[in-house]
Length: 411
Image (cartoon, rainbow, N blue to C red; front, side, top):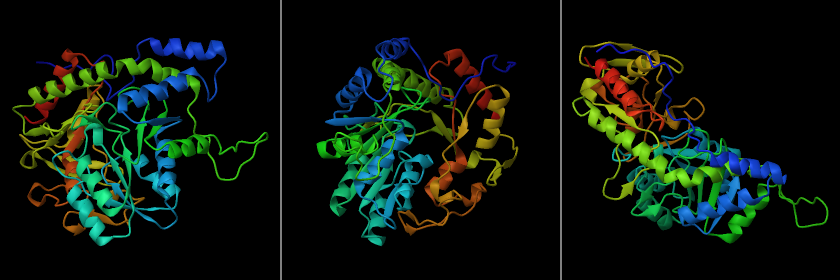
């Protein structure tokens, strides 16, 4: 069949609005509560605690702001080493550096593409004095968070849980965002629900919540004048943004159901191709299916090489690679993207320590050769994987066309 480019772009993941958001934004406007206090903020914090099952939440300007203040709660000082997820967006890691810490990256496991508990335990053998761990749930799929939590408890480490991508996902029936000593979620524009911006720090510790609330409002002391005794930040969420989040919250489960349907349609559509969908623990976890991804079987990879800013590949009959698929999707006006490039391969962090389950490891190459598959799991996933159009406004018919486009890449 002839495939024509989409007249209207099919996005990776764009905001899905419903109308209630405008109602609460208008309420903030009409009551003149436009700054960092108001009914929307109070309600969003209440709704988050109710959903996640945590005792306290603090609404902030971004998920990154929440992560930064989580690092302050963890007590990171200049020179402190911190174990971090390696395959994630750099917003998970940069706040460690804001506080002077040194990220040490931990490889993933294939079962969920998240931090490998065996590699984490190996990291503690190599660096026994580390007392902070930052773990992210990739693309809305929970990692082996109970094992990671147990390892942190064993070593007396403070666990920062980056649940920015996984709001609504559960592990063994428990919501992600409730496993960390401090946990963070995001309401960025492309997340499962959005505020256009915004984030939240979650904790069961009232003293910690009070500290974060104070830090986020420039650390103003309880005095009749503006008195400051420690460094603060302008990190509080506005009541207007909170209105958007408040209007989105009732639609969280609806969005998750739509994202799951997208994942299942891709899985069925690709059943005869040499690819696999991004995996999850079907016994213990329920993802929010924020992004659907695929990974190409090693034997079906054509030759591909990436520099820091460009990629080249050689077409082969019956084979493809992420670069080819993404380029062809773009020609048809559909947006995909590469898997997060692992932090240990980034120019910014290339010299930082990196730990696999075998011990210390280093980035090898951006090239991919099916006969010399990388032994570093994150490098392998990055080389063979890509994120598919996952917008929950995408129609089943549009998704069928995308499936056909990808099938043609392997002809």
